Length: 238
Ligand code: GLN
Image (tube, rainbow, N blue to C red; front, side):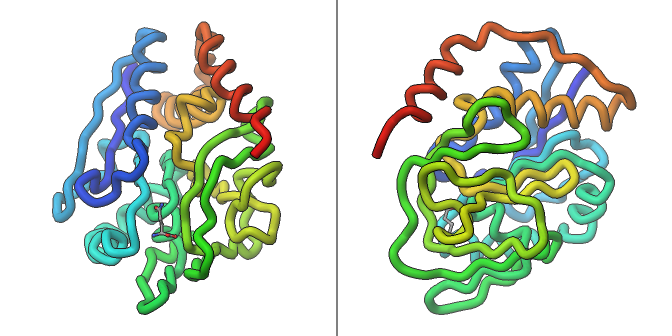
């Protein structure tokens, strides 16, 4: 068995160690004897979604988002079809915002892919700090770090989690991120997956099921370190 991960535009979307999410996907597959290939697509590269089992889109500054949105528009239709066909996607912060209709910055409107029915608008102050959620995708709290000016309204979409500590989508709704089919969009950097291995395994299971057509039980891993790291952040009062 093998999964192929497409890393979209690491030359532009690469904040706060987001690529650690890809290392986590790969390691947790390799530890179980499952092969993993990572294909980085730089801005302007042709993306062949038929080859991909997981797509990762990281975070970026307003400036980088403005550049990257043009490249994303070029692949919109195939990206949309991939998502509708239950392709697995993890999109963080700037990448998450760009899957929606638009991100209105303090000075311009950056057009999004309109794959998610969400909108984001810049405001002060930036929403920065450690964040803890309860998510239907994890029996443990989901922990991470957020740093965004965008306030995201997710309309009738399902949230990735409810905020226990921190700001989340907009600082007022008590919601964080979005789950749509096999896509998770979130403001959590950190990176997200090493501290929340259940989320990683959930996404890997979705990708394996889509590719091989049946439920593939992932063997349990020795996650004491990961769980300790998660617990320290979940219990930290700040
Ligand atoms: N530029 C966006 C914002 O500030 C996203 C930032 C990020 O990816 N961390 O809302």
